[in-house]
Length: 153
Image (cartoon, rainbow, N blue to C red; front, side, top):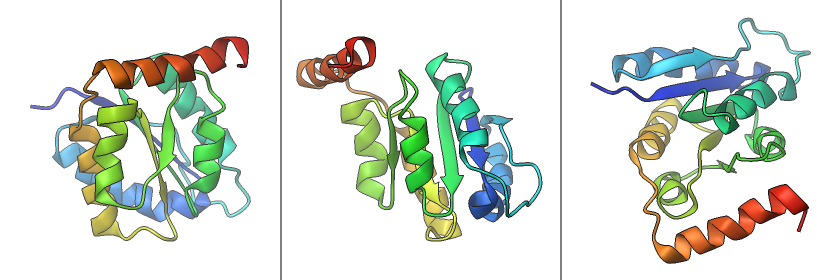
């Protein structure tokens, strides 16, 4: 049984994909914290949902995060403004797991208007099943990134 706690957030551009992913994630025994949107509203703004998710990831209130907007770009931009979050827009399998293994990525961003449902499920499983390897070279790089968050370079 999986005990990973996963946060998920979307705006109107990711609403349909999020609602398909929720039962998929629950069927794979992930604990889910849904940050919204909870209704389809074409006037909503992705930061209103992605930022609370990113803060939860940074504060370790959830283990990993999934953010979905129309293209995934805005979600990635917003999430990466939160110290402690390492988010990336992912469109293919290799980066979905390699981002975690080498870069300790903790939030995946997807485009609800560009990522097919089956592809999204595959990318999310690769992301959630990957583990940070913590090798010296990866840790050295990660510390350089973390230093930017504390002293702005």
